[in-house]
Length: 315
Image 1 (tube, rainbow, N blue to C red):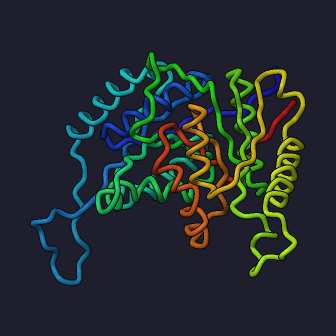
Image 2 (image 1 turned 180 degrees about the vertical axis):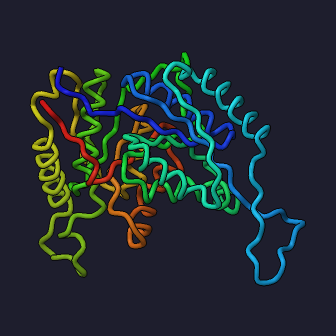
């Protein structure tokens, strides 16, 4: 069996919502599969009481957990971890911080987490802005892979198990998607899964001319573009991995996020793996255009991988 990706520490932030409980079950399953340590983190958001106005020219007071409150939170967390099937290797941690997302990122870095697992509420409008802002900020800024579990993803049964039989790995030939492919193939080999390596063509370059050439055959251009991309995909798949999982390369035409979701649904995929670009303000537009569309509408977990993540296929 070729060496699998290394996941020794799994960090799962929770906020006690049903959605984060769903993510906790997946985190426990991944940790159990890889024999990894699982740390379950709750960040209590420090905030001033609404009814109290601070004196002028002074910082607002911040409410914190009392010792009995902290003990109660920890006890509840342990109960949730046991119910999720992760009691054996899990540590529960409570932090207090004014910025929840920043504290999650700091803890992931300080603890050297190999994987972050978070729930996605799937709401829209103001509710999404309030409840989803922490997850979205963590997704954009985390250095390690992030497994996003949507609210309507299938629950691991029994708790502590994991079942990634059908994996869709989206590849756009960027460095981050090459890294995502390494994760997708390694997970596929570990699970003996069927892995679809997918590339989407929004519009072949020849068809972007205005006006297009009169001698241009649209069907021929599309067929040539698909054949070229399919050959590129095949060249990225190590021969050795085919001994451990079934791998299919596919090229489709259309908007990337829509086709990723459509193909994942049609193939009844258990996991979508995709790369995301660099970190920072400019990444927001790129990240939001594809990855966030997939995350908000996916019905299975989505694994986001960055180019700098230390991983690779070792055959």
